[in-house]
Length: 115
Length: 110
Picture (cartoon, rainbow over the protein chains, first blue to last red):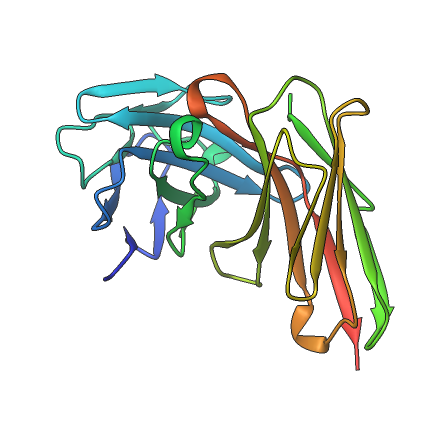
């Protein structure tokens, strides 16, 4: 199994550009989520999904959109990139935590720089 | 604000010593999880403790949970240089969202 796959690994954007970070998992997990990790801030939840067609906001959703059209994929869209969105982004998935106490499986991250 | 807060933020020890990291949280939880992150990599799950458990062991790891104090600790015994990493606690509340603390950076010197 590939687990959680994130693409691209690195990306540089200019302010105002848009892009989509891709995340795919092959473990049939219902729960998928996006975090950003900044120095001294730990991981902060951006958006999450408990199944296809269902998404919800996390702690820091502004400036990001998500959709969940399939169980496998959970892309994160930056509509108009800002320097404050320079960060490392992690996608993670699991069976539904509140039902199964299932741990999260993480991708290896996308390092995004906005100039 | 963050649900979990780790203490200390950084810890430096010698190989063979024990390392203890603490986590405090604010609201009621379903379970608490500990993760490890090596530099430049994603997080890896270490151990999960349910809200009705007080202690759990896995190899050289020992986790305790005190729901009355809203705190947990992770003990790594007989540490090795390969244990050098950042360690995060994460709490699962209502709705299944997993919220992470800021992490403890552990350095184990050979």
